[in-house]
Image (tube, rainbow, N blue to C red; front, side):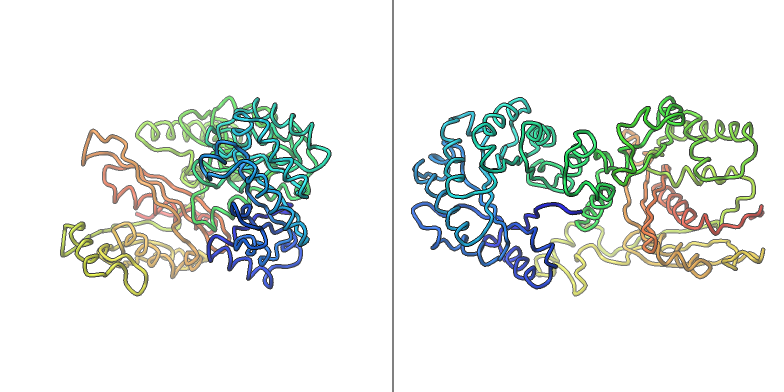
Length: 535
């Protein structure tokens, strides 16, 4: 993505970060190594930088740039680290001068700078002078507690720019405790800073750090800032989702610019306007950040939403009058289903199947004739089972599975009817019955359904269930409550993802219906284009 600097950890704090920098010496290419920043702190009080073990680790990392954190708040100095104020300034000078003497570019993170400036501006600026006089190239002003307001950031940053702007690069490091990390970062940029620290997706301690996935596009598209990563801006959505996938965390659908809902529209008036001009309800063209416009279907939708879906699917439904009539029928169905508890905003696959089922010539590739699901156990008190195993030291087995939650304690049978020939050259039906065991009834049903369909449709071997969400819609009904199930699928070969939804008072039925929709969506392109009678 061509980010300028990549702070890759604190080599003196833990073995993992130390191992990273050790491997980076031989496993990263020269361009990547040139961007690495090793993080650390000033030397300890009443010591010398050349004798400090964690300073030595920064040197051993061989990172060309070092970022050291220094206290810039007088109260933090006297009451938290309990150092003499002048000793703290000497800690900054000694650490920076030693690192620069060894050829390192030094950034200084001025911890608690904004709070410190409000507490004692003179001392906060003395910390800056100590770093500059010792040879630091970048002063990073930190809103460590995340409590500064944008107008405070602007005023204090402009003051710092007046004194240090011509000598060093000033930077901004914001935390999101007040939900203002992005706003404060952009405000600092407006006030003149040349460097902004942040993280992809705003990942960080407490409520997070400044989100580069919001800052970079805002600077590039709304401020026209000149950044080295501008030419890769269309990759930022992919970068965001790659990181979430790597960390095995669900993406934030509502994230600005990169979220799945960032350019999603469901209000009928909005969609009608978007048909005339995409700029009517969008602040940028989503393709500039690698995202896409999405038309959602919900009870707030208008006919235009459905027409947009039909147009996207390129279906041959009939002339414009027939299409419009069909769209109204589908919209009415959506509104009735949502009144029952369905939600289609995150289940585009269910909407597409609803449209396909209303199309002449579309034939579902299979039909579930019947199914059963059973659960069985020898100890209904799961808490006592877990405790007994833990007391015996049996926390996990050789496969890493947590014991106490026994595997294969559910069994399901699924009987399907389908065309035996996956290329649909024959109209002969085949009924196939499969049995499978699983960790629970839904897992067993999913496995049995996949076993029943895969011989005729080998592409389903690439199908994976990514997420399974359950929500009780009317908890006052207790065990009779209606349950909404939403399942996310992924094709590992194409990396395509889709979600389906179903509602039922029987959670197993709701789960199976959502599973069936998900499998059918995976096969929609190979479904028979003929009218077949499954009865």
